[in-house]
Length: 265
Image 1: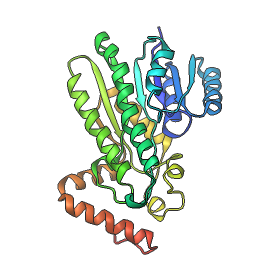
Image 2: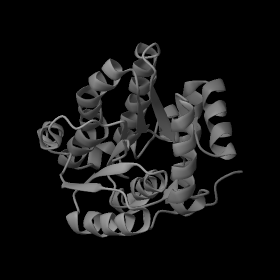
Image 3: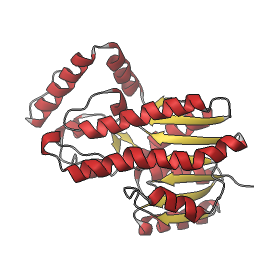
């Protein structure tokens, strides 16, 4: 019997690439996103290339009821792998940000992720088998001026994933927090970074590369998976340096980039 992977935010970027990887490995799929047209196009491609069964669910996870609606729609269908990939960011000083956008970001990046985990985790624990992949970020290890809420949500995802991973360690269920750095997806558009010198000054990784790394880490049962050597060094530096110093350095770098000045190397 084929295993099933459920992937949120599957229409683009890392979620789409993960769907392709799971299909290649013979997983049936449940793909969730707001864009039904993109999901249907992807499902037809995967069915044709790999012969897997794909269930498409058009759902906006910023809605509080969405996780329960997904659960009901699947009617107790066994999910072997849950990928909580859906999320977005916002690039703006908090004092001048739109609160509604920050609220929906918290709902999607944290609340929906935790709710989906709460719904599908118990059956995994009962079976003694299952895997969960939560999309965090290198932002989870840092304070983020001008993206304060986004960084905070990813810190919550990382902390939550580590804690739940510890709780289920004896059940043969694993929880992995994937922490990529800047990645070429639709994220930069949603966050308002498409014209940002900050985003384009950083080394950007392809969504496919992040997906491959995340898939391998998930299959190994790794709890925290930081993609890329430069990102691993960034995380290490953030852990070793005083928090105040890290905050000051990030603020100074972003301020110079916003002003169009070269940042110190």
